[in-house]
Length: 257
Image (cartoon, rainbow, N blue to C red; front, side):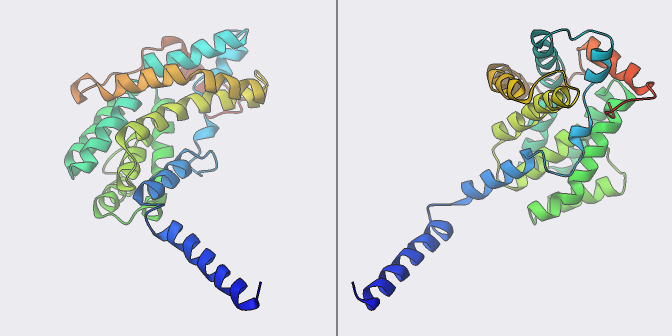
């Protein structure tokens, strides 16, 4: 094969690779998928994994004797807590953002703020949301997203994580269903990650449990997508909420909540 033939083949291959990136092989859905991966990445610096949703206190009280009990806690947090709370707020926020209705987006944020039962839960959600809001301009150059982030920075709206995450997702072209599932899966991974760091569960077992929780995450997502704004609810997971309140009074603790 001549040098000219090799050079020609290299040019064709390089051009095809460039077309695959810039052309129809990777349309906007590809960019949205990459944004979804980044938002769901545990390396995203918003501090979510500094929280355990009361698991640390439950472990100290001997309320989590085995993996089955831990799984029940995660399922309770999803179905009886997040589905009609953070999950539904994410769905409604995504819908409001796509409609260009900033007033409705702020209303959902305010309503969710009122539904946080404990000061610790409210502060954690706000803190993580504020940190994500500072990163929002790097995800999408969108006037409504910029206005929302500015309102959060000015403390004109609570800026809860579920709402901010949904707004960023909508601005990046991520589908509503995917944004909701990301929020719910984030809650499951937060608890399981804490369980691993608290030495209550091996890392491999945590991943197996997370994979096995897919039906419950999907079920919670279905509930969230069907919940109207007037039916947003506070968490009904009493054991988790009480544990978070008790945890806030502990002097020596590894996690913020």
